[in-house]
Image (tube, rainbow, N blue to C red):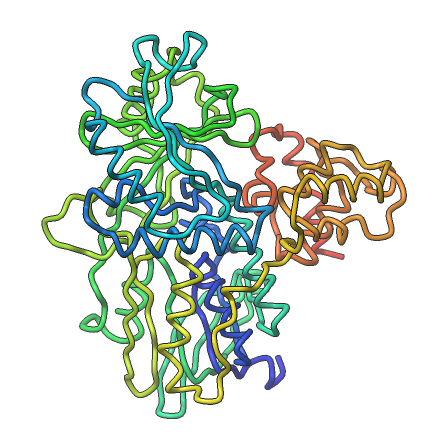
Length: 496
């Protein structure tokens, strides 16, 4: 490793949405940056979310008006920056006798509509359900409002790509094992989990964006007295066969006061979640509990004209949300906002506590603004009007038509999937290919060798899990034999 590859202005620990966003912003301001992730990009909380970019309608109940307002503003920014990844979606709130009052909801939705300007999103309205509704027959009234669905892990990858475009070094599967501060900066010991080689990187400022691990890392590096307490809350989701033919989401009100989303997911499924359960287990391997499964199935069966059982569950996942501790507060009422903690030590370290996917860009902007005193020559903020890689188009149907005309031999369903995942970067996958045969081996579900090679060469993918669950979401339709075949190919490719 050369000197230019080991000395940086800023070293960011954590390859989730906050870390990737900070790295991109910093690189765009002219800093030399390295982003370190001990696993794969988005391999923890940032790939196990509810897949929403939203203002947080339910946060209004807890009087978090400032958080809702800035989230709604960011919803507009991100829809413009990544239209292939952030898609407006109608949400309906079915009303039952035990639901919140209609007057309360109407007032909340009015606030939601007016707290920030809307360009991409419609206004809320009352709705009536007919006999052909997928909901339970007694449900006749409800409300509708708008938010957005997001491919969370691909949003992280897009930010990492943007960081690299601006000159950052992205180091997947590089774990920080030690760090020591001197007045001139940090010396950081790093283990490369692929080669097992140990490296030493230096930087002027260290940013701890390790998500659920942020407090642990703070304690290890800066001392336990510098670590801020976190409230670790597990949020779990179920993936079920599609519950509604309509491309609409539902917000279901549980009798305990919480809400559960039912969201159209990957064409054939419904994503149901989330729960909120205090967590103290292994941060690397959270699992959905039987109680959470029962909780989610119970509310689905209560609202929908179905009887879903355990046997029909297609998949499940759990993520750990690092919330800022507020002693005595229920998990559902703890703020989803964030806190930036700057420790000067012998050398500066800034730690990110809390946060949510929707506000990651604003968080990154504020991190860099806080660090300006250490980098007085740094340029100003720029991401509010920047387009993420793949997002440089106006209308997806027009882009799909352009690609179909440019590559008439490509299957329409493959074009559609590529556009949803890569936007205009889909053309980079095609490259010099002139026929379906040029795409190489098909590993299953229209995942061809050329796409796999692209993901390895351009998007830091290493394993079948990286590709099937975080880059493409094809894991739900791959057989064990197809996974084995892909894994074998990836192993051979690494040995070349």
